[in-house]
Image: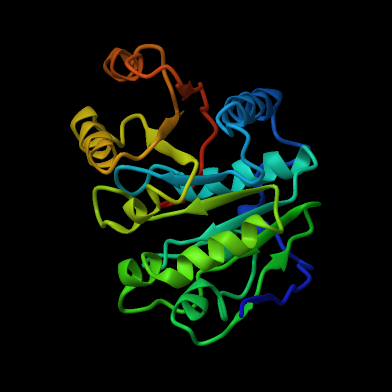
Length: 252
Protein backbone atom coordinates (compact mmCIF):
# COMPACT_ATOMS: atom_id res chain seq x y z
CA UNK A 1 0.00 0.00 0.00
CA UNK A 2 1.43 3.37 -1.03
CA UNK A 3 1.56 6.10 1.58
CA UNK A 4 2.99 9.59 1.86
CA UNK A 5 6.09 10.51 3.79
CA UNK A 6 6.36 14.28 3.45
CA UNK A 7 9.53 16.15 4.27
CA UNK A 8 10.15 19.82 4.76
CA UNK A 9 12.15 21.70 2.18
CA UNK A 10 14.27 24.15 4.09
CA UNK A 11 17.08 25.68 2.06
CA UNK A 12 15.32 24.42 -1.03
CA UNK A 13 16.66 26.61 -3.83
CA UNK A 14 20.36 26.34 -4.56
CA UNK A 15 22.02 29.73 -4.78
CA UNK A 16 23.74 29.05 -8.10
CA UNK A 17 20.46 28.05 -9.74
CA UNK A 18 18.11 30.58 -8.16
CA UNK A 19 18.23 32.94 -11.14
CA UNK A 20 16.87 30.18 -13.38
CA UNK A 21 13.72 29.61 -11.36
CA UNK A 22 10.56 31.66 -11.57
CA UNK A 23 10.39 34.08 -8.64
CA UNK A 24 8.81 37.37 -7.70
CA UNK A 25 11.95 39.07 -9.01
CA UNK A 26 11.72 37.50 -12.48
CA UNK A 27 11.11 39.97 -15.28
CA UNK A 28 7.58 40.93 -16.22
CA UNK A 29 8.01 39.32 -19.65
CA UNK A 30 9.07 35.99 -18.16
CA UNK A 31 6.23 35.94 -15.62
CA UNK A 32 3.65 36.84 -18.26
CA UNK A 33 5.00 34.16 -20.60
CA UNK A 34 4.42 31.48 -17.97
CA UNK A 35 1.04 32.97 -17.05
CA UNK A 36 -0.01 32.68 -20.69
CA UNK A 37 1.17 29.08 -20.88
CA UNK A 38 -0.68 28.26 -17.66
CA UNK A 39 -3.91 29.73 -19.02
CA UNK A 40 -3.64 27.59 -22.14
CA UNK A 41 -2.84 24.45 -20.17
CA UNK A 42 -5.82 25.00 -17.89
CA UNK A 43 -8.06 24.90 -20.95
CA UNK A 44 -6.81 21.38 -21.71
CA UNK A 45 -8.01 19.87 -18.42
CA UNK A 46 -11.36 18.78 -19.84
CA UNK A 47 -12.88 18.44 -16.39
CA UNK A 48 -9.98 16.52 -14.88
CA UNK A 49 -9.60 16.99 -11.16
CA UNK A 50 -5.82 16.64 -11.41
CA UNK A 51 -4.26 17.00 -14.87
CA UNK A 52 -0.91 15.37 -15.54
CA UNK A 53 1.40 17.28 -17.86
CA UNK A 54 4.42 15.51 -19.33
CA UNK A 55 7.28 17.87 -20.17
CA UNK A 56 9.81 16.62 -22.69
CA UNK A 57 11.98 17.68 -25.63
CA UNK A 58 13.36 16.23 -28.87
CA UNK A 59 16.98 16.19 -27.67
CA UNK A 60 19.12 17.39 -24.79
CA UNK A 61 19.99 21.01 -23.99
CA UNK A 62 16.52 22.41 -24.73
CA UNK A 63 15.65 23.52 -21.17
CA UNK A 64 12.98 20.93 -20.36
CA UNK A 65 13.90 20.54 -16.70
CA UNK A 66 13.96 24.23 -15.84
CA UNK A 67 10.65 24.61 -17.67
CA UNK A 68 9.17 21.67 -15.76
CA UNK A 69 10.14 23.41 -12.55
CA UNK A 70 8.93 26.84 -13.63
CA UNK A 71 5.60 25.57 -14.92
CA UNK A 72 5.05 23.82 -11.60
CA UNK A 73 6.04 26.97 -9.70
CA UNK A 74 3.64 29.04 -11.79
CA UNK A 75 0.73 26.72 -11.02
CA UNK A 76 1.67 26.68 -7.34
CA UNK A 77 1.70 30.47 -7.28
CA UNK A 78 -1.89 30.35 -8.50
CA UNK A 79 -2.78 28.45 -5.33
CA UNK A 80 -2.91 24.99 -6.88
CA UNK A 81 -1.37 22.17 -4.87
CA UNK A 82 1.30 21.07 -7.31
CA UNK A 83 3.70 18.14 -7.57
CA UNK A 84 6.62 17.92 -9.98
CA UNK A 85 8.09 14.45 -10.56
CA UNK A 86 11.60 13.81 -11.83
CA UNK A 87 11.07 10.88 -14.20
CA UNK A 88 14.36 11.48 -16.00
CA UNK A 89 15.99 8.69 -14.06
CA UNK A 90 18.88 8.45 -16.53
CA UNK A 91 20.06 12.01 -15.95
CA UNK A 92 18.11 13.48 -13.03
CA UNK A 93 18.53 17.11 -12.05
CA UNK A 94 15.36 18.48 -10.44
CA UNK A 95 16.82 17.71 -7.03
CA UNK A 96 19.81 19.89 -7.90
CA UNK A 97 17.57 22.83 -8.82
CA UNK A 98 15.91 22.67 -5.41
CA UNK A 99 18.93 21.40 -3.41
CA UNK A 100 17.20 18.20 -2.37
CA UNK A 101 18.45 14.70 -1.75
CA UNK A 102 17.56 12.30 -4.57
CA UNK A 103 17.51 9.28 -2.28
CA UNK A 104 14.31 7.32 -1.68
CA UNK A 105 12.67 8.76 -4.75
CA UNK A 106 10.80 7.54 -7.80
CA UNK A 107 13.10 4.63 -8.71
CA UNK A 108 12.86 3.11 -5.22
CA UNK A 109 9.05 3.35 -5.31
CA UNK A 110 8.77 1.77 -8.75
CA UNK A 111 11.29 -0.97 -7.95
CA UNK A 112 9.22 -1.95 -4.90
CA UNK A 113 11.98 -1.06 -2.46
CA UNK A 114 9.60 1.15 -0.49
CA UNK A 115 5.90 1.90 -0.27
CA UNK A 116 6.55 5.35 1.16
CA UNK A 117 6.20 8.16 -1.36
CA UNK A 118 8.78 10.63 -0.12
CA UNK A 119 7.71 13.99 -1.49
CA UNK A 120 9.50 17.09 -0.31
CA UNK A 121 7.73 20.39 0.25
CA UNK A 122 9.77 23.25 -1.13
CA UNK A 123 9.83 26.71 0.40
CA UNK A 124 7.51 27.73 -2.43
CA UNK A 125 3.94 27.56 -1.20
CA UNK A 126 1.90 24.67 -2.66
CA UNK A 127 4.89 23.09 -4.45
CA UNK A 128 6.31 19.64 -3.71
CA UNK A 129 8.93 17.54 -5.51
CA UNK A 130 9.25 13.79 -5.97
CA UNK A 131 12.90 13.26 -6.84
CA UNK A 132 14.23 10.57 -9.17
CA UNK A 133 15.89 8.35 -6.63
CA UNK A 134 18.95 6.25 -7.40
CA UNK A 135 19.67 5.81 -11.12
CA UNK A 136 18.29 2.34 -12.01
CA UNK A 137 19.46 -0.04 -14.76
CA UNK A 138 15.96 -0.27 -16.30
CA UNK A 139 14.18 3.12 -16.31
CA UNK A 140 11.76 2.36 -19.17
CA UNK A 141 10.65 -0.88 -17.56
CA UNK A 142 10.04 0.86 -14.23
CA UNK A 143 8.10 3.76 -15.77
CA UNK A 144 5.83 1.38 -17.68
CA UNK A 145 5.18 -0.82 -14.65
CA UNK A 146 1.86 -1.19 -12.81
CA UNK A 147 3.43 0.55 -9.82
CA UNK A 148 3.76 3.71 -11.93
CA UNK A 149 0.04 3.54 -12.69
CA UNK A 150 -0.72 3.13 -8.99
CA UNK A 151 1.57 6.03 -8.13
CA UNK A 152 -0.16 8.37 -10.56
CA UNK A 153 -3.59 7.32 -9.30
CA UNK A 154 -2.39 7.96 -5.76
CA UNK A 155 -0.91 11.42 -6.34
CA UNK A 156 -3.97 12.53 -8.30
CA UNK A 157 -5.95 12.10 -5.09
CA UNK A 158 -3.65 14.49 -3.23
CA UNK A 159 -2.74 17.21 -5.74
CA UNK A 160 -4.43 19.67 -8.06
CA UNK A 161 -1.91 19.16 -10.87
CA UNK A 162 1.20 17.13 -11.63
CA UNK A 163 4.16 17.86 -13.90
CA UNK A 164 6.47 15.05 -15.02
CA UNK A 165 9.96 15.85 -16.27
CA UNK A 166 10.98 13.11 -18.73
CA UNK A 167 14.00 12.34 -20.94
CA UNK A 168 14.14 13.60 -24.53
CA UNK A 169 11.87 11.66 -26.90
CA UNK A 170 14.43 11.19 -29.67
CA UNK A 171 17.04 9.69 -27.35
CA UNK A 172 15.14 7.10 -25.29
CA UNK A 173 11.56 5.84 -25.13
CA UNK A 174 10.91 6.70 -21.46
CA UNK A 175 8.65 9.69 -22.16
CA UNK A 176 6.36 7.70 -24.45
CA UNK A 177 5.11 5.40 -21.68
CA UNK A 178 2.88 8.20 -20.38
CA UNK A 179 0.87 8.60 -23.60
CA UNK A 180 -2.25 6.99 -22.16
CA UNK A 181 -1.68 8.11 -18.58
CA UNK A 182 -1.28 11.86 -18.95
CA UNK A 183 -3.41 14.80 -19.98
CA UNK A 184 -0.82 15.55 -22.63
CA UNK A 185 2.68 16.54 -23.60
CA UNK A 186 4.39 19.93 -23.58
CA UNK A 187 7.40 19.89 -25.89
CA UNK A 188 10.33 22.16 -25.07
CA UNK A 189 12.46 23.30 -28.01
CA UNK A 190 15.21 25.85 -28.27
CA UNK A 191 16.15 27.82 -31.34
CA UNK A 192 19.68 27.14 -32.57
CA UNK A 193 19.65 23.87 -30.59
CA UNK A 194 16.68 21.91 -31.94
CA UNK A 195 16.30 21.64 -35.69
CA UNK A 196 13.05 21.05 -37.56
CA UNK A 197 13.81 17.43 -38.59
CA UNK A 198 14.42 16.56 -34.92
CA UNK A 199 11.15 18.19 -33.94
CA UNK A 200 9.28 16.38 -36.72
CA UNK A 201 10.69 13.08 -35.43
CA UNK A 202 9.42 13.88 -31.93
CA UNK A 203 5.96 14.83 -33.16
CA UNK A 204 5.78 11.73 -35.38
CA UNK A 205 6.82 9.49 -32.49
CA UNK A 206 4.20 10.92 -30.14
CA UNK A 207 1.48 10.89 -32.78
CA UNK A 208 2.33 7.26 -33.49
CA UNK A 209 1.34 6.31 -29.95
CA UNK A 210 -1.75 8.56 -29.94
CA UNK A 211 -0.21 10.96 -27.45
CA UNK A 212 -1.94 14.29 -26.92
CA UNK A 213 0.49 17.05 -27.91
CA UNK A 214 -0.67 20.13 -26.05
CA UNK A 215 1.85 22.53 -27.54
CA UNK A 216 5.39 23.79 -27.60
CA UNK A 217 7.47 26.12 -25.50
CA UNK A 218 10.02 27.80 -27.72
CA UNK A 219 13.06 29.04 -25.82
CA UNK A 220 15.09 31.96 -27.16
CA UNK A 221 12.44 32.63 -29.81
CA UNK A 222 13.29 35.07 -32.54
CA UNK A 223 10.83 36.37 -35.11
CA UNK A 224 13.49 35.86 -37.77
CA UNK A 225 13.42 32.10 -37.21
CA UNK A 226 10.74 31.59 -39.84
CA UNK A 227 11.43 27.90 -40.27
CA UNK A 228 10.28 27.26 -36.69
CA UNK A 229 7.15 29.37 -36.79
CA UNK A 230 5.96 27.98 -40.13
CA UNK A 231 6.10 24.50 -38.66
CA UNK A 232 4.48 25.42 -35.34
CA UNK A 233 1.50 27.05 -37.06
CA UNK A 234 0.26 23.57 -37.94
CA UNK A 235 -0.77 23.24 -34.30
CA UNK A 236 -3.63 25.20 -32.82
CA UNK A 237 -2.16 25.16 -29.33
CA UNK A 238 1.27 26.77 -29.66
CA UNK A 239 2.90 28.17 -26.57
CA UNK A 240 5.85 29.84 -28.24
CA UNK A 241 7.19 32.97 -26.63
CA UNK A 242 10.17 35.25 -26.89
CA UNK A 243 12.24 34.09 -23.94
CA UNK A 244 15.76 35.50 -24.30
CA UNK A 245 16.51 34.72 -20.68
CA UNK A 246 19.63 32.57 -20.53
CA UNK A 247 19.63 29.29 -18.64
CA UNK A 248 23.38 29.40 -18.18
CA UNK A 249 24.91 25.93 -18.20
CA UNK A 250 21.62 24.07 -17.91
CA UNK A 251 21.87 20.95 -20.07
CA UNK A 252 18.29 19.87 -19.73
